[in-house]
Length: 287
Ligand code: PAF
Image 1: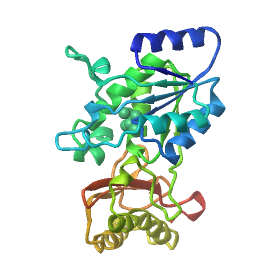
Image 2: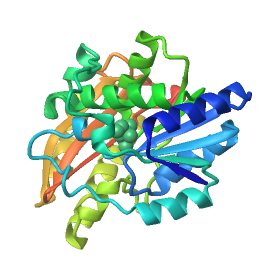
Image 3: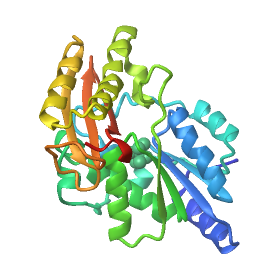
């Protein structure tokens, strides 16, 4: 496994790999790898001849007062995990290589996709994500890139951006990986105290309850959200940022739950902001 920090060296290597007829599968991350990332790497291993992982904590997607400085980092551990997943190449650039002093170009996906939900709560976040993902795709030149569905809106933004910019890459969304008690895996889970970790279960429990209500035929969005809100607010350390039921592709809010409905939620537990999402109805259960 090689580790490359230099952008030009990375681009030259990936160009040579493609010229030699190899398929590049790419998993972009901010490091501090967990099972969710590893599931992307395993699928990437299956899909590509060359498996590339990038580790870059992207300053452009963090807002003022967010956790950029304390975002967990452990390169030695990530390196070991990557090796065990069969990664061929880690791209590990420095922030000032990606964004030199005279850096001036950003990718902005406009519309409800980036102004609602995460976009409303974290202004500029998706501009930072779209910019770095576009840059990484141009550097790594993969035929396929894999992203987790825990960041449901991010995945939609990345798909929109690659389609609109005609980037020749297949974007693959992979299922959320959960702890055995239901908590969605996230690098930020390490911030949680034991008591907060317990209360953080209210996110996945709300999802399960939403699915249960919809399957029982309770499809009025207002009624379902009121029940879920009460569940989460019963946790003393939990503060709801948003709790919405939206159409999976337009991201517009719905009044009735259908097969295209997705529940999306962001909840701050203690000082840790957590997100989760999931669909509410299978085809067979439609209200
Ligand atoms: O999901 C993440 O870890 C990041 O948002 C990504 C896609 C690597 C861009 O920095």
